[in-house]
Image (cartoon, rainbow, N blue to C red; front, side):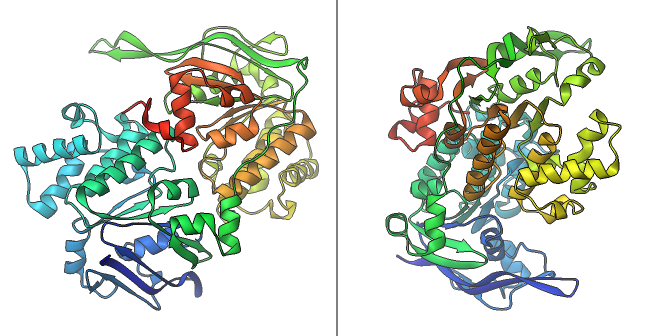
Length: 541
């Protein structure tokens, strides 16, 4: 196989304030024509920095390359002049990033964003560009592409936005596509679609793919060869089959073993019901016209009933837009809804914000993105104590810090770190801080909204273990919302499967995973567990 890209002895340093960190240390790998090579490793391993170095997209300074060559079709990209790089970027090598919402311009339509690339590299404008844009959107599986040309990024689903990013990347028929965690934020069914799409496009166009990920399940599905990175070094590389069946390096073995396992502790079937809802509805009005008339409703949650017992975890699964998070927010009375919501015999759905305040300490939430949910201007002590300042106003500073220290200890963090700030912690540590903030008030019910989806596999295992231990120690009840069915299986006693605001199937976790009854549930499980039927009932964008 001809070599398209050759990375030889590449190092990347970052120098700030007189201190130098070695992000990448003397790595070497190749990508052949028509080949998919995956670089896999946890956050901070250097995989994305290596990928960005190929197109020289790092900030120089503070970044520098003390050693290495990056040969693309014989041209060394590290020493190439600006004109050569401009021609190669977006033309011969393109890149798809992890989060399309931050990569796409929120002020430009789909047509403008793809059209810009065609105008810059191909000189295509007007009707010719429009025809090519529709062609590209069709290629990446956007339904009725003509109707999407005037759409802005916020008007598209996560899967559609990622497809638009891929269409932009393919606009100039590149020889190499670099995909940096392109499916991490997507539902399992949409993830399956995007992976199938990339494989199909690769077969049709003959392009090569460099795929960056922390998910070994994806590597197994898409790659020909894999490079395993940790602490800036490639510790093992080879054909996917060899690496998966005969991993040599301890780190590779650790990654392959990092999957949430086991089951939650059995619950008492007669345990008291903490919180329940009957035929809960959350409808958002669709307002149109000059007079702002309501012409319909988005039925985000439509007639859902749920009861959570003490010490029980109810898993809620489904694709984006299925109503999972809306259901949780309605139970916690963070949004308005119709239908009774009862906490320990008290109907709370009609209570004012002031009347709800005494219940708040018992009803807590942990969000998906720990970095986004923790204020960067507050110390960890201030973040964890925030609820205490409202619920326990008479606490002295010393008593408050003591409670913060206890909460941090409960989640496995050193209380001595409480005066640091969120940016000084890893993703997994930040999620532990978010859990500590919820625990500080000693709640009885916690809504966990995708608490592991932004984390590496090994960190996911740790957080699942932590949550199960806390549940056992404190008899906590959880509403566990996730699209990661492996985590849901390890956490949940009972599962609701949601689609378009309604529960399409529910039952004990063990029964549901063993014998799913609906096509939709089977499609979700197939996509998550790499079953052959993965694409049979997948809902297309």
